[in-house]
Image 1 (cartoon, rainbow, N blue to C red):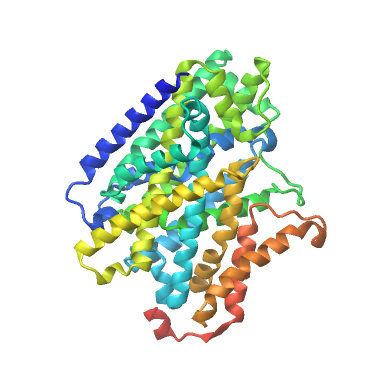
Image 2 (image 1 turned 180 degrees about the horizontal axis):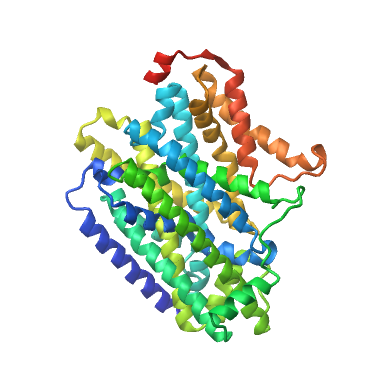
Length: 488
């Protein structure tokens, strides 16, 4: 594919996003930017959240890791179902009842100032790292496909990418994101479905033979029952459930979309339908992975050793020009759906949780929001460039590992607040939330030696949350009375 053609596709795609931004960002204020005036249609939110949740990592890493892990990733996906059920029935009713803009305000009401700031700070750290990891993966693909041939350095291409995202989000915020994510999710799903269809056609598969090929392939194993294995079913299932609770239910980015719905009933409908669609889409990505490896074997192609490079390698070098274009559009859509949402959520959390927006006039809010949005963009650029030095065999594995260490304290804080009646010594919370990830790393690193060969996987999140919960319990100072708890 010609780099000029790809660059033209990217430019045309962003023109569409900017047009959507123009149509949705007229007569906006801070309430529009943060929660779209709580008027978002639930079905639009549900559909758009698919693109935000999956990101370019899923688009590239999930198909690529099929050779090493088969369909065992579905064990985590099944755990997602339980996690989203908890979010819809426990966390979202709490957020709506308290009428929150930033979900971390709950921590101040329940525990105090230091707990609130600690929770918000961990979100800023977590979402900045995770959004940057996701963006880094796709920036690398575009660098290989386009910018290297044009002589544009990686740092410059990253700056241009985030600048374009800033352009179409800085005014409309969440109101714009709801609609751009819908467009981008549709683009991504069309790209995946088209790729599966055209590769199947080239391999002379109809629907029935495609299903048979997937079932009879060496990649079809779903369940692992070896307790010591890193992908043992119950470890993966519970990790999926808790990762979902932490990375969605305790994440301002994902919850901000749900809080933009008109009421709790519509937000719950959004969550339930989104849950069903997400499972189906993940099965599509795993099926695509089987097709990629089958295509390579059939054509005698030598694939890259790094799983994340398999899909881009085939799409850019061996598929038809049309399929290459479909791949580029799909990866742009799913990545920017995740990045633009993260940028808006990080701006919201910084403004509400650290700039005390409630005490400011609307003019002051707008001015500070613009500066915060620009500042968050700069930070994201720096983190993406820094991440360029990391060599990971699978970025999706890196993402879940980072989530385990950074969302664990949030999981422990919310679990303690929701399921105990005890008061805590608020000033010690930052120390507890810093020590818990350190202890988690030490235990995980030595688990094979200490626990008879047991190997920690993504369930480090559960361990981290438990250690945070235990630390809060150890430093708690007695039960709160019924009236005091009700006021919290």
